[in-house]
Image 1 (tube, rainbow, N blue to C red):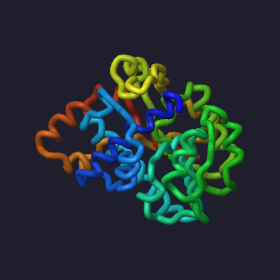
Image 2: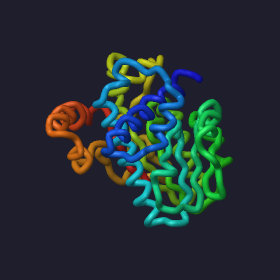
Image 3: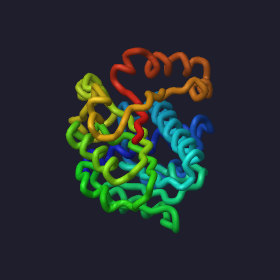
Image 4: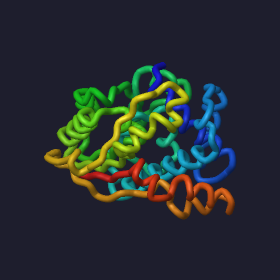
Length: 261
């Protein structure tokens, strides 16, 4: 497994830790997989503050996906860079089909823990090769989950991925997180992914320029740290967490965008 693939253990650890505490995210599968995989993460990756942040990010993606499905019950859900995430089980809203996609090494591990069925499938897919999007299921509407993937793609590769989706599906709803260029540069000095050997990340400064001419438009920016979830922390934890993840500096580093076509 390469360095980028190893980063999946960082959010897995965070979701497992938070789920065990009974706050923010209920994810017994993360607890089970983390216990069995026992990947040796270290340093900043084991920070409880990062665990809270990873769990909140996952919860925001969960809630958004569920909301989109309630409005579009016949939609196809495509989760690119799924890692060992169990979102397809956490989101209870039915869909026509859910496809979790990642690189072959990751999908091989996923199949130890998750079973395919009539509406749930796993697929090996390289996000840097947009021609592979054409092999996904056909559908009028697709809900695209791009969590923790854009920072491993160059701007050209990211634009190519979005372009492929716009050409494949008539209607799209996309949620994606992204570093800014400043955030990507700063990450070489202080980022948990450094602990598993990743040294190069990419940022997006202008999401509207990224999608210009692609039939995809920017809808709005979401918060990674909704007040309702921050309230689940203890008073002292809330204070520290807000200093770390809700200030102006954090927004200059990391953003969460909703797009549609």
